[in-house]
Image 1 (tube, rainbow, N blue to C red):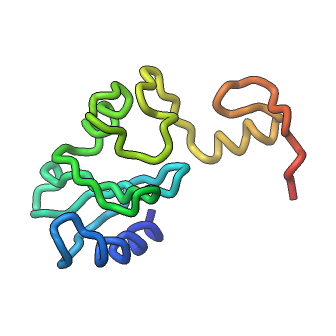
Image 2: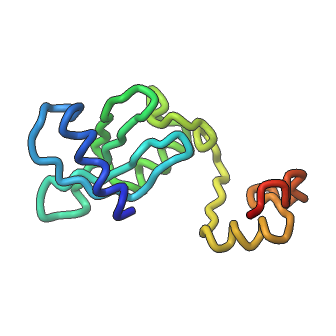
Length: 128
């Protein structure tokens, strides 16, 4: 996330929701459509930092006055008026599954789709 934290201010400089200025962004996630999910550092209390999302598809920053956990829960429950991300695979997903990249790689190396646990029909086709 260090690299994404360095990328975020470049987008903020040109498209900040309330104009240019100090960004104070810390990236905590990205999705499959190149959206960057960040905290906006607005003071000394991290619990008060809102979530801001660089929506790559629309080329805009979207601000949400909530923390990371509430933001994700609202994604999984489809509680926002509009979906804030470009990739819709998490929207309304009442039983999301999280995998560490090492576990995902281990499952792929065994020829399994890491998200379904089923044999991956493309296993080995694109290996180095």
